[in-house]
Length: 315
Length: 292
Image 1 (cartoon, chains in turn blue, purple):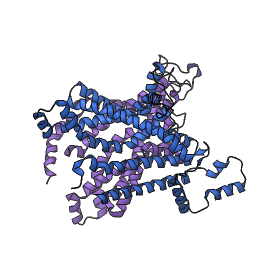
Image 2 (cartoon, each protein chain N blue to C red):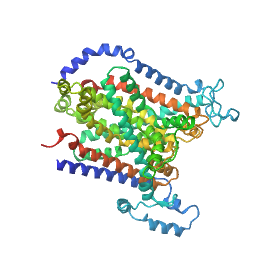
Image 3 (tube, helix red, strand yellow):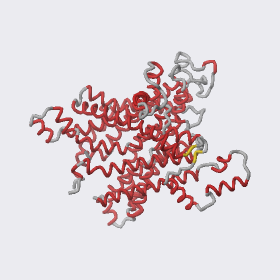
Image 4 (tube, rainbow over the protein chains, first blue to last red):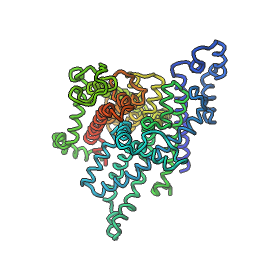
């Protein structure tokens, strides 16, 4: 058990090392000379040479990589030369909380709405409810989220004037203002996951409800809601956690687009504007941050299985 | 032993199942027709489109949908219907080409990982893990940062980003096929290893891969149009749907058709493709049929 956990941790660290090599090469492969971008159009040969030496660009690649990795691990991510700000502060302190708030609210919304819908469609199998949920599940997973966001802005922002269509208010400063600003973006991002949760809940529950222990619970005279919500739904937890861990990437990807649609100053905006401004240091930081988040969450999901499902506990 | 029973089962069921496919799945048929419609638009765009997609007519700027311009015009006075029809070319060809790159790359890496074993397999799997650690859009963005923008760059970036998931499924299939009796028998008969891979393992891997390809085309189209929407994919003037949606974004309060029409086209194509993909998987995926 402990050995298995160690092996998984080791695998994760190795994967992160590969990602770090790739992100490091990103900076090396990117077109243009970073020194020239930093110095602007007019500079002397000495200024160029001294900056090259200062940045350590004249050293061997392996040494450059190790130095960079050391700096990265200790939180020294360099300076964004367009935003004139420390990249670590920019990425982790300013952008990441926005993305995490968006992702968490979307995920919460998806679970709160998706699970009951899935239950409804499993319990009323082959009825209008079930068909409706199936149509929602299908369109929800296929519909492009950025277009959905624009539709919502058009209907609820421009036509009805009900919700603000852009900007971010930190909920830890102004809770209701934050929620108010987060409703449309969170809904936009959540539809994909909601649809997936509906599908998953329905599929799992339909199978579970045919099990003997459900019939036994019914025969004991337990109320219908208890049979479904306690005995039945418990079995949905495991596949749900697995899927959510694996789909975290899709969540982050959706967040990038949603942030652009609603002009939220999150990680996605940071990476896109960095690509457009040719700020490869920021792109690199964004890539490393996203990958680390994804890999670590999946490691936690992996390690948490035995606690979620007693059947997987070592005897 | 376990193999024989289901094969007989399938053989008995097969003929009636295939014959009624289109009638049995009305949604699938409808979705297939929609997809074919988009495909026809893409192929015959110059003959179908009423206007030149990049012809700018200032007199007709931002006209709402009407008799002259069925789906209206954009802020440059370009006919939106014609742009959508030509845009189908970009969407479908970017989708198909990038999925091809992803599938070929996945086939090579997946086969290599599944057939070698040992430390090479472990390393390749970690490589795949690290590709999968990044969402395909972010990975594509990173490649765009290196490659630059443009249609060909988008195809390459999205294609590389899709190698991860493809290699994983290919490897899983190789691991299953490799231990089958016919492979072992071929080995015992002294057939050279490369020939076994070519004649016995590859065909059993290609088939599920083809099913995967049809499912993932919609993902490729979604990611590529998202790139254009973010402003880092296809650069104007080509009539790319993602680009058109992004252009109309600023005018949504008074000219909603500008992003609404291309967005609807994109949504329709993606939904149709996902229904077609689901149908194909349910009908043709050997794993779903024998398993469950």
